[in-house]
Length: 177
Image (cartoon, rainbow, N blue to C red; front, side):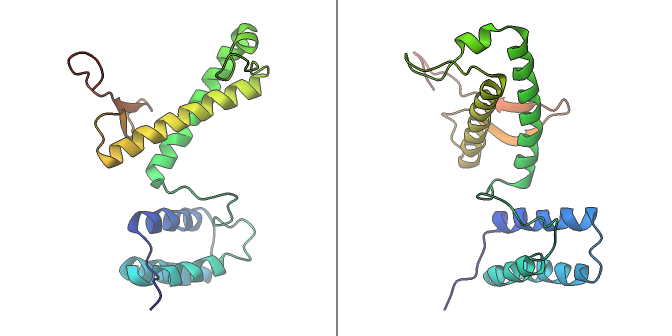
């Protein structure tokens, strides 16, 4: 027999896209059917893939479909994706301001390696710095998820000031944790 299961976290991430869409847009007659498929999939994890197929088929002809994404969809919980979006905007703005503060950053900062070329433009610099930052934050979240206390951890949320609380591993006698 075929396996139609979908993990809870993946199902919840997908459903949140549709629920956000329903809150922001008038769905008319489609709303009741969307809610029914979501309810059935939530209550029957062994058949979720079938209900997800129903949901994606319903959005196939919708112009502003929340399900038409380019590239691979993130498997991170929605709260983590939302936090990363806030942090990304702040980090980009900060590095753009830093780059604009002096031409030094365009001349000196470069990718790793002796022969690496400087970033040269603000867009290249900001994009590279932001990408590195997001990779580090995702790694910290994955360490948190796994309970890996040897690496920096982040629970995926932001405090009241919009900042992540990062737990740094404690150093043991003589160096690393």
